[in-house]
Length: 292
Image (cartoon, rainbow, N blue to C red):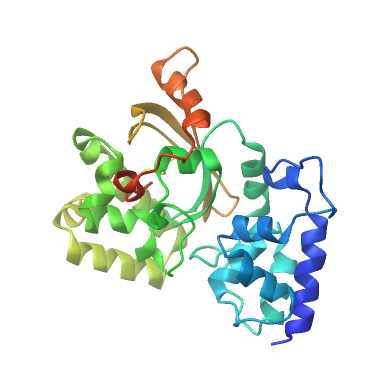
């Protein structure tokens, strides 16, 4: 691993990104043209000390997940992301899914501009790749709902929905059958689109073994791409927030931008407005385990 070249590359990319490009306030006293080290660390979910060591050409070799998080934080192109991985002597990760996936630039650019509504980018298998502060405020701060740190679709929300009962606390119990059916119909559409994908085959096999509900729904062979849905989200402070969830698929269908809105004048719209006030500051222990 070329630590000195890796450090120089990170510094050069950091200097290029402006705070406004990533939803940060520039502030009156900035002595650097781009982002500060601690800001990159925050955006990537790393400690400031660890990132500082990387820029000094020291520290432990970064993992695939760490490199992918840095690529997102620094808004690297796909070629720049690949170069970052090469400098760290890491294998280039799959582009379509997994925690090391590279967020489609178009979707990430749109996410950066959605500052007044909760929004996130996920894979077709419901692994969260990136999300804005309002999405964190709405859906909770648990690692399972943010950018994943462990690999594979089993780290995603779809798998957890059928294997971890606590993951369902984000929706009222009476809505669970609807969401289960929607998840499975969408997964069948994804499986058909990808053809003989070994990863999806393994995921389906594990879910059929682990969940009778999933097995029964899978055998109905219902299929429907999840493009939009009406949801009732249980928030620990605001109560039930009724929202419309919209979905924009990437060109290859492997990733999606989700954003949440409510019609003007509705109770849901009023509660979404309160999110900017509530933020994630009161995500107590009771709220930290809530999945997205």
